[in-house]
Image 1 (cartoon, rainbow, N blue to C red):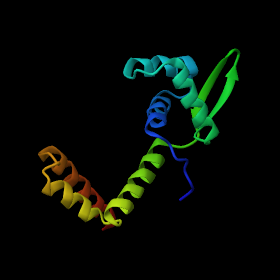
Image 2 (cartoon, one colour):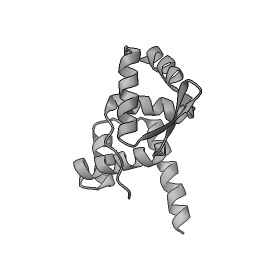
Image 3 (tube, helix red, strand yellow):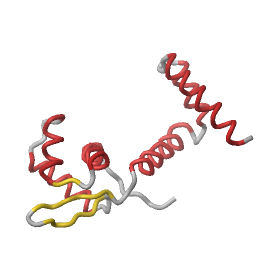
Length: 127
């Protein structure tokens, strides 16, 4: 697995907007994030610059506007983060993680049903 950049929670919020709307301009990113956060446009621009520096985003100048595109896929990043979480807190044992959630009643009946469906689909692919 290739090395992915460390992204803070705030940077992750920026990435979610970019993943959803790419290619997207600075102003469009700012418009989206000021609806859901208390961040100033300057803060958002700083977060975007950090993501470019970290290699998570590329940009091109189109006339007088910067347009951003992600260099890492959302699914790849989230999968990597999930794998890291599982290794760090449950020694890579997904059964232990799910057991902990079930014991603490953190899974709803619909979530348990969704897990059951995923497991059945996964086991059919291996047959």
